[in-house]
Amino acid sequence: MKGPLNVRLLVWPQYVLPQKLLTAIAWRLSQTRARWFAQPFIRLFVRLFGVDLGEAERSDPSDYTCFNDFFTRALKPGARALAPPEHRLLCPSDGTISQLGRIRGDTLLQAKGIDYSAAELLCGEDRAAPFVDGRFITVYLSPRDYHRVHSPIAGRVVEEVRVPGQLFSVSANTTLAVERLFARNERLVTILETEHGPVAVVMVAAMLVAGIETVWGAPRDRRPGPQVRTRPLESVELVRGGELGRFHWGSTVIVLTPRDFPDWLPDLQPGGRVKMGEPLTVAGRGDGPAGGGD
Image 1 (tube, helix red, strand yellow):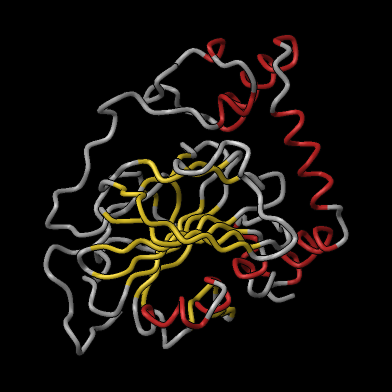
Image 2: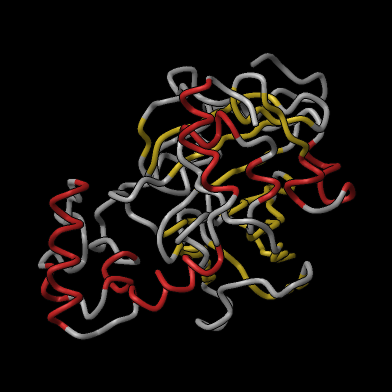
């Protein structure tokens, strides 16, 4: 563990908690359709976390059949305007920027003093090779956020990799203390082939959050098995801003781009709030073969 002592004291119980048992219990409860249980829980959650249902397709809490139905809620049609096409990449989700910047060779920044590798995150050196010296952005989805994840760019899904792992929280405190957090947790890796090259979208699960559903998979196919499961795909096309998948409870999304992609907008900084559909990259074609700065 790393980080200040007070942070380590807050985080260390996660090492001994039965992460997967607690997550399984949370999943069962979130599926409970008894209104005497689901409705008070949903209303309490809305008040406790300040959830804004104004953009939701169903804005009345009583319209949801269970907590999971509420948590994976859809937006109203037209609720979000997509960034103009000159901004090549748009934000895939609502949330808070945890980190962003250059991938230094194969290395991504998790938090101050804590790095991890793209090969670990994507589960393979060959898969990570196109992103050497590229760029990454990490977006944390809090409980109040909209929990569907959208494609940041138009492209064809060529591979899905479901990676088993641990289920640490992905809160700000945990990212400061647990080394290689995003490469240790259960996750879904999606590789998109676009007209500008490959883009990786990684949805990271967490404690109470271990359910990741895609628009191309069966609804029950939300968890990895005991081994890494790789699935090549040939006919899944995603439009820019189209839904890619959803969290059953929320977590973190990491996007990786190649070296010659445009840089992140200068006003994007760790701790800043973002919404799905907003521009992430500066307008233009990219840095070219020589690359660029942070």
